[in-house]
Image (cartoon, rainbow, N blue to C red; front, side):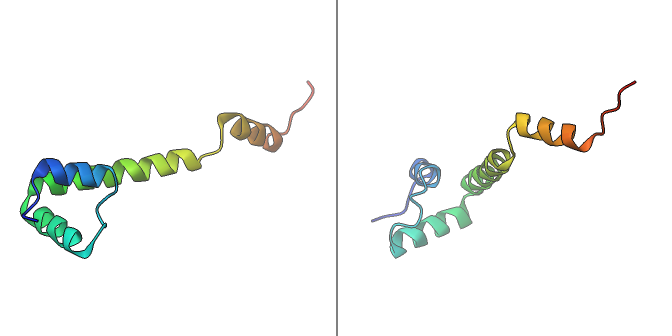
Length: 77
């Protein structure tokens, strides 16, 4: 297997196929070391993944509103 091109690296990073075999991992690391565009793409994927995990970890809006209602004392005027 020769070196990987940017298109193949991007496909493998996006599909999470980066760590199939040791020689593929080595080729990916070498390409990422040499190619600033693919390194930036990898960083962007990591940021998007982190944001998605944080967003999905938040409770639904209805639960948040219910908890706020429980914490705010209601007074009859």
